[in-house]
Structure formats: structure tokens, C-alpha cells
Amino acid sequence: MEVKFYNQLLANNKKWVQKQLDENPDFFNELAKGQQPPLLWIGCADSRVPANEIIGAKPGEVFVHRNIANMVVHSDMNMLSVLDYAVNALKVRHVIVCGHYGCGGVKAAMGNQSIGLIDNWVRHIKDVYRFHKTELDAIEDENEKFNAFVEFNVKEQVLDLAKTSIVQAAWKNNQPLYLHGWVYGIDSGIVKDLNVNITSNEDLEEVYQLSF
Image (cartoon, rainbow, N blue to C red; front, top):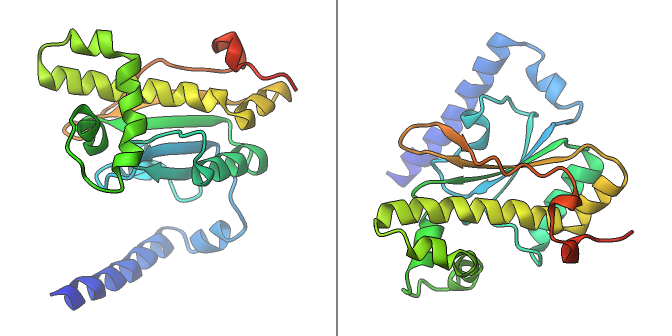
């Protein structure tokens, strides 16, 4: 069974290649010339949230970073490296943090069950709950609270993006860079724009505004 599944993946790749070539014989030649995506997508690692497909983008149009619960952790060198390359080398104009309802990482942060190594990552999500404890504790319906927590988490990650020296340096150099927060509905396929759009460090509290 496992061999059959693995071989099917290889067969699917060949079918996909042929489909692209049938539609555009130069498809791969054009891709090989390089990439200039206008967008960096920071999303959840959940297999049900494919960045390109959600927004109808083609290969080469979206630079992607994914982790558990679409987090922007200031000490995460993986995320920072992706962000730095996207902003300073690729010159993306938009960065979208996209969470999703039903996120397992956010759900774990609502409870106290130890899962393993991931507990250390989930702790960052718990910080978001602490920041918004009054609003979240006031919501009696658990599903509504869960959804609100997902939204608060995305908003906080967008703010954390704006706090990075990478993003603030780009703004200082008058580089157009727009930060956005979305939540994807797995049961609907629809994206909700949370209207947390940041375009300069003036949208941050003064203590986070870096001087260069």
C-alpha cells in the first residue's frame, strides 16, 4: 500500500508536467528564468490550506513560509530568513499572514494538555490569549471563542511582522510594503480580511519604532 501511494505521487507529477506543457509549451522554461513574486505568504502548515490554490495563483507568484499556527516569532531564524529574502532580494510588495478557523495549534493553546516538543511553540500562541484574555473570556460559546482566538492570533502576528527590523528598514528606505491579516474558512473556502493593514511603523506603539 505504501509503495503504491509513493508511486502514485511520481505518476501524478508526470501528469501535472504534461498538463502544464499542453497549456503552455514554455511554462518551465519561463519559470527557470527566475522569480519575482509580489507576495510573501506566511501561513499555517495545515495540509488543508494551500497558499497558491486559495488565491488562484500560479507557480512563481507567491513566496511561501508555513509553520504551526502561522506564527511570526522574533527569534525564529527560519521565518526571519524567508522574510529578509522576500523583502530585500525579491522586493515583494505585500505580506499576508493567513490563519484558518479550526487551527489545531490555536486549539492546543486553549488547553493545558502536553503534546511534546510542540508545547514550546504553542506557548507563543498562549501569549496571544494572555494579551486578549478579557475579550476571550467574555465569550461563552466555545466555538465562537475559538474563532475569535484564531483572529486575534493573526492580528498579533501582523503586528509582530511590523516590529521586525527587516520590515521597518524597508519602510525607512521608502520601499512599498503592505502587511495584511487574513483568516481562511476551511468549510467555506472563503478568506476573511481582518482589516489589519499596516504600511509604516507609525502604526506601532512608539516603543517598537526603530531609528536607523
